[in-house]
Each structure stands twice: as C-alpha cells, then as structure tokens.
Amino acid sequence: MKTTLRRPQLSGPQLSGPQLSGPQLSGPQLSGPHAATDRRLRLRISLYLMGAAAVAGGCVAPGAPKTVPLAVRHASQRSHTTAETHAVLDKRPSFEQPSNRADSSESSLLPDVRVAPVGHVVEAKQVVFDQSPSDALPGGNAEGSDAEERNGLEPAPVPTAPQDAPTPQPVEYFIAEALRSHPRLVSARLRVAAAAERIPQAVALPDPMWNNTFWPIEDQALQTAGGRIAHQMALQQQVPWPEKLRARGAIANREVGIAQAELEQAEREIVESVRLAYAELWYATEAIAVVEDNRALVADLVTLAETRYRTGGAQQDVLRAELEGERLEDELIRLRRQREAAQADLAALLQRPLELAPEPVRELNLPESAGELNQLVDAALACNPELRELAWQIARDRERVRLACLQRYPDLQLGVGWSAVTEDDALSGVANGHDNLSFTLGVTLPVWREKIDAGVREAAANRAATVRMREAEEDAIYGRIRRLLAEAEGLFQQLELYRTRIIPRTERTLQLATADYRGQQTDFFNLIDIYQELLVYQVQVARMEASLAATLARIDREVGCPLPTGNARPE
Image (tube, rainbow, N blue to C red):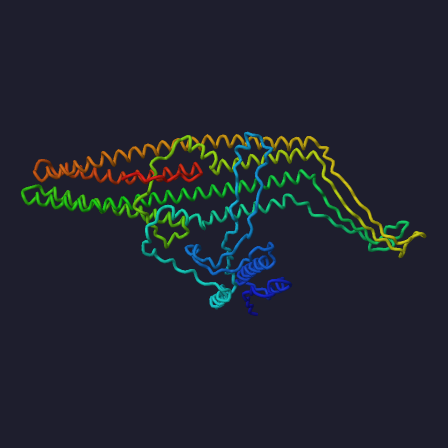
C-alpha cells in the first residue's frame, strides 16, 4: 500500500482541538529501506505540528501586538519597512527617585534619572521552517512552492550595489541617524519598559487561595449538631508586612534606573563608534585628496626631468620621476580600500550595510581645546552612565538591606470560610440546616533569627561591594580621561607645529630645490626626497586630525556628556 503524507495546513481550526492529535500521523507502517525515511518524515511532521500548536495556544499579553507573518527580506531593508513594525507600549511610566533617607555620601552619587519614552517600535518576525515531508517524495518541490505562495512568503530580494555617492554630511547627521533606530537602542528601551512593568508586580499582594472541601459519600460526611456538612469553602489571602511591599517596590524602581543607565551607556557607545568610523572615513578621503593633488606636482617633476634629459641630463631622473607617479597610484589603491572599509563600518552602524556609501565633509570642525581636566572630571561624575548605573545599584542594595531587616516582622494570613449545612441524612435530632460563616487570622512566626541575620549580612556585604566597585570605576575613568586629555593636547600642539612651521618651510625648500635643479645646482634625488617629505607631512596632518577627532570621541564617551564644539581651529 502506498502512503501519501501531505503538508498540514496552518489556517483555521486545524491548529486546535483533536485535529492535532496522533491519529492524523498514523498510517500503514513501512518496512525495508523505506522505514527510516518514514520515521524521519513523521518526526518532521510532529515537530511542525508542535510549533503550530505553540503559536496557536501561546500567551498574548493584554494590549500587546500580535505577531504576524512577514515576508522574508534582506537585512538591508529593515530600516525602511516601517509598515511592518508595531507599537510595543503606549505609555511611559513614572518612577520615584532614590529614597532621601540614604546616607549623604550615597545620595550625592544618585543621578536624576528620567526614563525615555518607550513607545518605540520593534519589528516582529515569525521564522518559518519549511518542514514539508513532501520534499522527500516525488513531486514534493511543486507542492512546497505552492505552500509558500499560500503562506504569503516571497523570495529574499537580491542586495543591490551601492547607489551614487550621497551628499557629504557632517558627523552629527550620522549620529542622529544611528540613534534614531539602532536595534541595540530599541532593545535597551524595551528593557527599560520591561523593568518598569516589574514595579506593579513587586507591590501587588499574592494571589488569594480558594478551596472547597466536600464529601461525595453522604454516609461518610462530617456531621454536626446543626446537620450534615455538604461543602466547606474557604478564601484565604496572604498579606505581607506593609513595609515589605514598599521595599520591594523601591527595589524594582531602582532596577528601572539601572536599565535607564544601561540605555544611556549604549547610546554613548554607539555615538563613539559612529565618530570613530567617521574619523577613519574622513582621513581616507582627505588622504586621497592630498595624493590626487600631488599628481600634478609629480607631472611637473616628470616634465622637468625630461627637459633636463634633452639638454644632457641623466635618463634615470626621468625614470625616477615616473616611478614616483606609480608609487602614488599604489598609495591611492591602498587609501581607496581603506575608505571603502570605513564606509562599510559607518553604514553598518546606520543599519544600511550594503547600499549606503556615506561621504564626509571636508572640515571636521574640531574644537580649539579638549577642555580642562577638572571640568571633565566633574562632568564625568555627573554624566558617566557607568557611574550612574553603579549609583542606582547602591540604592537598590540599600533597599535590599532594608527588606532583609524587615524579615523579622511577621506576615498576616486572612481568611473567610463558609460551610454548607443540610438537614438531609443528618444524624442529629436537633439539626436545623443553618450554614456556618467563619473568619481566619494567622501570622507567620519569624523565629529562625540566624537565617534572617544571615540575609541581612549578605545584603550589607553586597551593598559594600557595590560601593567599592563604584570607587574603582571612578579611578579608572579619571585615569582614562587624564591619558586621553594628554593625547589630545599633544595632537593639538603637533598640528599647530606642522601647519605653521614644518609644512610651509618644506614647501619653500621644494621651491628652492626645483630652481636649483633647473640651474643644474642639485641632483634629482635630492629634489625627490624633499617632495616625498612634503607628501608625508601633508598625509600626516590628515592622520593627526583624524586621530584628534577619535581621541575627542573617546573623551566624550568617558565623560558621558557631549563635549562643546566651540570654534573650529584655523587651517
């Protein structure tokens, strides 16, 4: 007998009820070489149906967006398909600040956290596994393609090559684009929203307990003077000590502050990455421009060497000048490759790694100085997201110490009971069938003091460890700021030296050497050496500017606050 296994449909009532049970997977058992194939196909169908049942019976939060199948598409289109995104939350929670009862040494460390709006959108995808058993059977490919059309799937589009170069933009434009919809920031904002939803859970009472005791055999039921008891119902509610709920809510509130600090940390890291990639892109572009400008100078040197050769000069001067032109071509190839790599890094940060070819502006608009060390340290103390996160952790650990101390107080147990009494089959001669109403009041007995004291010591030790961790992080951040500030000041001084003294004097020396070569007072190798020095100095100035921009980006990352741009340094 021939067995045909068809792909199960994922629509309508086929995802629920008995239609997902075993009999649909049963059939004539195959033997021989087809037995192993039959088992594999049955396993694939079982996994497919299990996944469909999980989707059909999954838990959907009230007000949460439903996950809908999306067409398969390439990652380069994620930032452009806004019609396939949904709103995750439609409210922004408010959070209380850390308790004013904190020690003065700790309250000064706690930042003023303001939670960013969490009504952002996130793309919901549904992964579709093609587990059709018909693929292994004759004619299975056609059936599989039909099923894909029914499921609304489309083949992934082929990535296109980068379009024409866009208009050059400053680094602030790319920073705004990266912060607008970067998946890491969306994830961090959702974590803030998730942490906010833990606050009402922490301050809520436990679920009440309802139970019913009944006797199905009447002659074995409980008997009282009032009659036979048919049912005994009880409703009980555990009520923790009120301060415990407040402490748990405060802990959850501090967790929101920690999540917000992590969001700020992710933002600063993305800003730093964009600035570093932009600095590398600017350097490669500027170096290419410098080399292109020197092509004309090399052409003049070739013409000068040929003129000298026609009047009795050495032919090697012409060959040496032409070789210098070939060396420039080699340098251009290297710089263009470096420029493409920087473009790829920057485009990846903008969620367009395949089709975007960003272009920088000609001027970096660097500030005149990196700032004073004391000002940067004070700004880092107030703005650095790592320090803010540790400050919130200290506040959270302080509330945990308070909660551990509150374990010495008992919790309450409140209840109400109702007994249904009937005169039927009652053994008492005075049975009246009146129902009974009762109330229950109970308390826990926190008598195991050693356990409670151990919890207090644990919480206090964690709090002290977090305080020391913050002190260590402060020292590390201050040390990095000092080192980066020294690097920036050194680059400022070097740029001033190269622009005002070294490059102008080298240009003047090249002019004099060219005149001496025309007058046969110097050789061509001396002229080429001076030219090469000038080219190296010009490229090195571009490298130092890019390094200075990268150093300022790292300082900005360590401080946590945007550095003032100020006026651009004169060229």
